[in-house]
Length: 455
Ligand code: PFF
Image 1 (cartoon, rainbow, N blue to C red):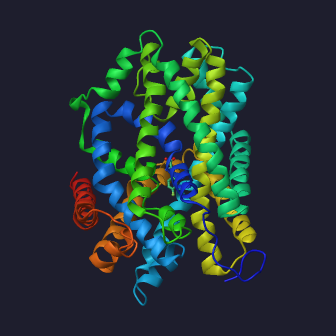
Image 2 (image 1 turned 180 degrees about the horizontal axis):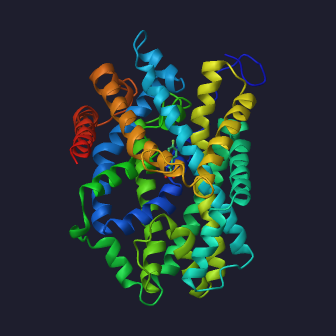
Image 3 (image 1 turned 60 degrees about the vertical axis):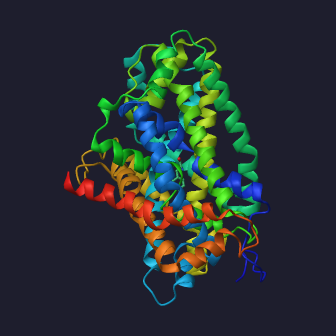
């Protein structure tokens, strides 16, 4: 294979294990944690949702992550080629293509929301959140998000930033960016959580997060929690396959996956602690839905001591988190184009940029002028979100665990997890991992699917 400079070379790779970890955690920690998780917690009964979510992280999320990691590192190839290499002459490559399609859907609406983050950072810097009037803030957000040009401009800038990092490559772009931004992101969100938890009247917010109310749990809660665990850990989208394909043979897969899942979950909980106590302290309903971050939080910032500064920090964190994730989604599609169509990296980035620019524009306009265009009762934005998080990611996740657990088989899994026996992984841990991959994850995923069809 040739690089973008046309010199014969090896594939791009991460420079260090720490680099792999921050890139994986960077992908996992994103709008899913700061935007999706808090509003889903708010709509689904707080702590009860969190407990179900944690159950799915262990039963389904971790095994799918291990399976994707095994596929990527064993093949050192992008989404479809990975399956082709490991199971030549079969149709398993389709699973990889589905993952890439899923990334196209996600990046389209993700970049629009990232653009909203940019607009709100700009508003925060201009100290625009001075009103505590909910109606005025609602009008501000709906006026902006349903308009034509400004959200499109913000989407274009956000996608341009993403493309700029991915063009620089895995080591010089993705790894370097994530190494600097991830620690900064954690610091900012911990700072905001401390401020929020020390507000007078924040106690009920903490109770809401940590004391389960099972009466709010419905069958939808289970699908929402499973979908969120996949979305938040970036699973079923070939992201882990693609990043793992840049990882050297010595890396410890179990430890990297466990650390990534832990970092993502801890970050989601810290984000919850940054948001819910403040929501309760100001007597606002937690179930505001997707608008929580863009309407409820500015309301809170306008009333909170030092709210102006907190607003700037929050939206900065939102953008950094979104960028470290959007680069990973773009990388999946770009790596696919490079290897399938023999494109140079720059060309692949440009082509995918244009594709997502158009699809993202449709998502953005579907909230405004194209509101009437619905498919399956949803506008394009909601359709892309639903199709990816509640459908494609779960189907792909199921295919990946079946592929690794049953097609590659036990021996290959033991071999990958212990690096050919050179790592001393306790036998019980290896057995648990293979049990989760072969039985627990497929059972959880199939059970939820059957449940949904029956409803
Ligand atoms: N995990 C990201 C988030 O929580 O925002 C979203 C995501 C990134 C999904 C990468 C899929 C993906 F491949």
